[in-house]
Amino acid sequence: MKYWLRYSKSGLMRFVGHLDMLQTWERILRRAGIPLTFSQGFSPRPLLSLAAPLPVGMSSYAEYLELETREEVPALTKMVTPALPQGMEVLGAVRVPTDVKALMGLIRYADYKVEDLGPEQWTCLEQQLSSFLDKEVVLQEVKRKGGASTINIRPLVASARLEDGALQLRLATGSTANLRVEDFLNQFSLAHANLTISRRELYLEKEGQLFTPFEYITCSYSR
Image (tube, rainbow, N blue to C red; front, side, top):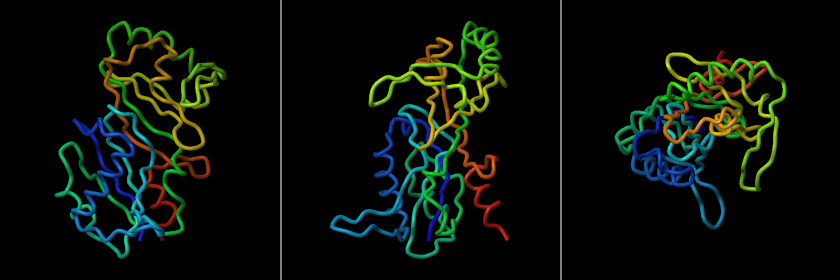
């Protein structure tokens, strides 16, 4: 059986990195008594994966774990909740047909909320955001593990708006294209050290439309 589980990550858990988060989930699921499916080979590991890496220090209300179990677990969220450490909360789970591709390969966009913008930063965005969105090409130097490169970041920004006292962003993320919030803010010379940034949702794309992971399962496999 395959499941997608949505959870939030805040407080001190913000500082747990991607690989350590997988190990944390392995301990949580073992403690909760979830009948996990393991890989074959010399060193079997539980079949777990996270939808998209989260930058260390960023909180999120839309983290997704994909897991496989030996049998159906109808009360998955109820079983897992007592085993969670402080700073994590399960927000739902959905059983996924086994023929659905791995979630990490399906993610295309993410929503972010940037808060605690100072008056000067807010004014800067008010003056420059519309001009940015009107362009087709915006070259930006981005740094990755392989070094720095200059790319056109404009196609990677699905939306950007000032709303409810914060900057609301929808940026490309995943295996096919990815733009970090920090790279977007650098385009406006905005220092992000004192900003509060959180991930609010992840999206998959189907026939030109975006769906949250749970919506994707509902619209694709509901009868």
